[in-house]
Image (cartoon, rainbow, N blue to C red; front, side, top):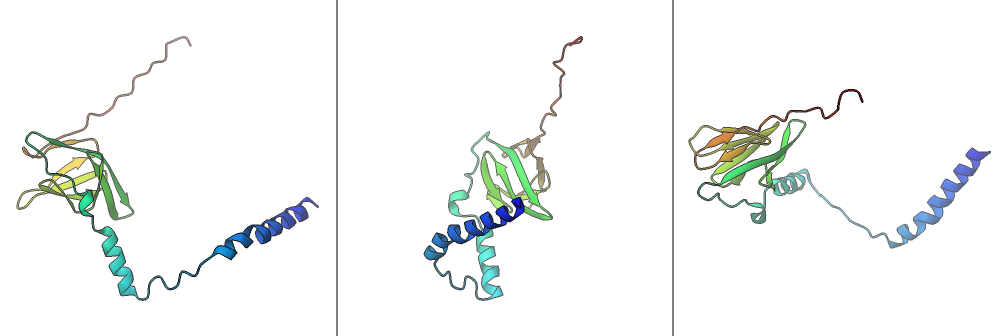
Length: 144
């Protein structure tokens, strides 16, 4: 008998709860007309805006690689000095390519620098300081 009450309660909630939503719903119309418009929209979404650009490093400055996100086989974004950077976006003198667990920093005519998450990069010296591996210490006392 309790399953019958559950069905009745669900049907009532659906009927009475959805009525205000349906009354205020507006027609969205056609969002995308062609596959070409869809490709153009996706390409526009992947392009960084001017507000997201990272300023060029000053003398002696370093870039800190805070994180990288790769979805499947597609690079998505990285975080450098706390700012989100899109794949192939300019970061100071470099172009950042997001790769698994880090960033490839490319500069015109020079070899790419691989900087793993946690590393720091001296942009002027082109030197990567690897992250220090964290060690785990036991704080447990014997006999407890």
